[in-house]
Length: 227
Image (tube, rainbow, N blue to C red; front, side, top):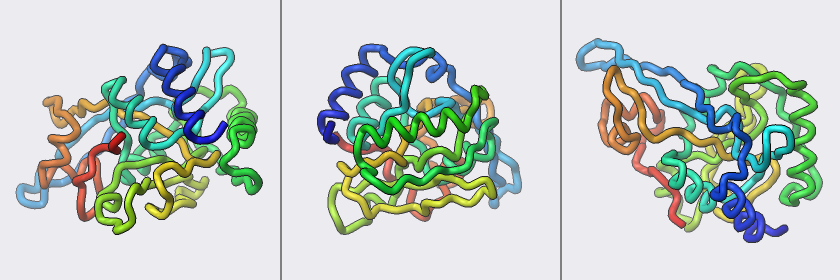
């Protein structure tokens, strides 16, 4: 499959419900900041998929690599959004299963390579359950997308090593249709619990104090990919 046919296939299967049931059991991730003007600590919780977007049943499934355009359609359909760089770091710290990244070098954008990488990860995981991280670079939302002079960018970040350092810094060098085996899509439920109040993630981003719960960039004003 090329990227267009893979996107089309993924959208058809996922939106028809062909996803493993474990993927929709969202996991809480806790974060906090100190409001510099008041000195008060603000706590928040958001909920993420325990693994990356996948197709199939619990006993027969595979992670699938898709463009941010297809990912956004899926996120919208499930009332979700894509994470930021800060959130990817928070998710890694919270993960119950942290695996060593496995780079691959040939036919990086081919579906067979993506399938092979899925099998390698499952060999590493050895059946362990829970929030998993360190296995993919994340497609993220980032203010850099709006400020890159080149059109149609995708932002990627992560692929943390066991020492906690990411292989991939925040990067917008790829055009948005470029997808390889290393890029994964993790979904975040768009309602964030800030203190005792539930807020839409866009309202959190628009608040100059609260946005730091989810975003560590200078500009936190890119909320979703167009499609």
